[in-house]
Image 1 (cartoon, rainbow, N blue to C red):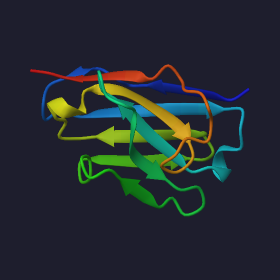
Image 2: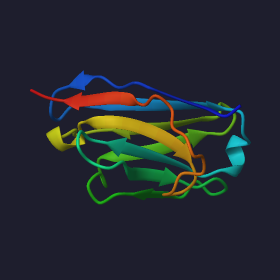
Image 3: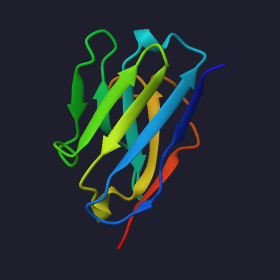
Length: 118
């Protein structure tokens, strides 16, 4: 079955960096674009970064552009999110899903908590 396993979240100070990982299995990873989403307390889940399947074209939400970088390794069936210059507003649970800017699967992994605090 399809599995999406996010990891790498932590407590970090403003201005710090984190690298999130999303390990996948159970579907043809190389054929799917992938997107990272986040959900802050009291807010809806929102997409923050996506990467296409064939050309690895990327797209970012304005709020993270220039600070976050999404990448993928089709052999490892893994997608990463490098987050730099973290801000308090980046605090959220981060999730990955297949698809570009809209989830392909109707379920979510457990997510990984990112807390930016001084």
